[in-house]
Image (cartoon, rainbow, N blue to C red; front, side):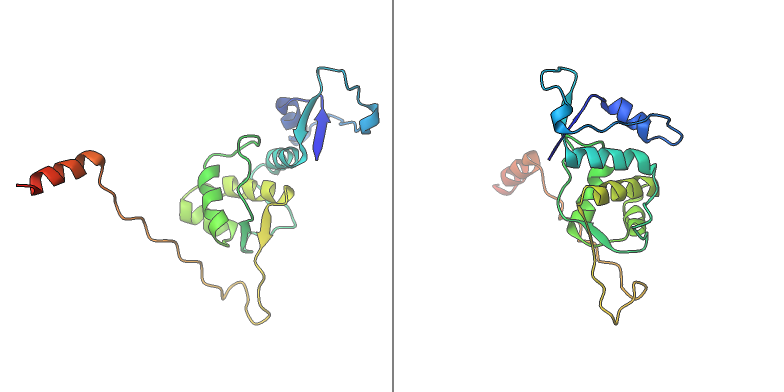
Length: 169
């Protein structure tokens, strides 16, 4: 799905700010002049991601509970979408396991507004999956998922060569 617009990212971002008096107009695809060079085409997922990220302003939408465990179903296309600071670290953690936005911010040591904005954008783009909770479990009784152990330190090429030479005596 593609979107055709005359607005650049700066104008779209300004339209998402609070108190913006910009009125957006929607046209059918037949009414768009195809020969016009000032129209740009972007994917619907990218547009939804960007609009949600800019309009969330570090807050969650009402449909998402800050204490509900969620995860990303796949990596967002960060080459075409706006990103928050630490977005790669947040996405890397969220792709692997179900965590609440509060837990993600605590584990990574990043401000909650970055995590909440990315969560809102992922939900708008359809990339957010909520964890199914059994009827006998409540969200308070679930233990946080264990983080993977840090990888073993690797020796650099120079140290390995030096080690081979020293042990060859």
